[in-house]
Amino acid sequence: MAELGPLRRLGRRLAWPVVILVAVAAVVFVGIIPTRTYLDKREQIDTASAELAQLEADNAELQAQLDRLDDDAEIERLAREEYGLVKPGEEVYRVMPAPEDPIAVPDTWPFDQLRRRLGATPPAPDDPTATTSTTIAATAGLPPARD
Image (cartoon, rainbow, N blue to C red; front, top):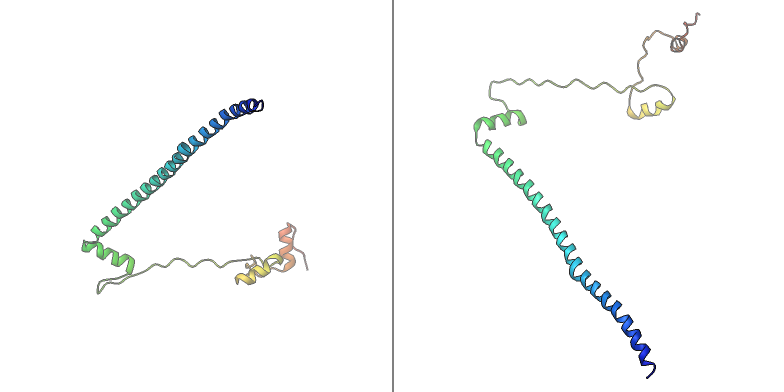
């Protein structure tokens, strides 16, 4: 019987922490988990509401476009602009954009393979009659060599 006394005291000492731990676990499972689920659902509702508002705006825009298509003048304008249709006896002139300049890649070492891959042409020299020594001297800031 002497052993029951210390065991009871140990049981009483451990009982309160166990009761507190069970209470905290109950609060977590009853309060926090449903709250998190509630907040997740709330976020989903907000996202769906924003998407619904965007779809309603798109529908209103499409309805306005459909209403404009009830007019013969609008149909004619779209046929002319988008499909290039003309009335009999009319002439259409289209202004084409200027052609793009060809790619000019230097005709020196690191660029020669790039030039071949791109199919580019080397840049034209400033003076086609200039010799190599004249070109080198001019770029170095020296007077041209005399032959």
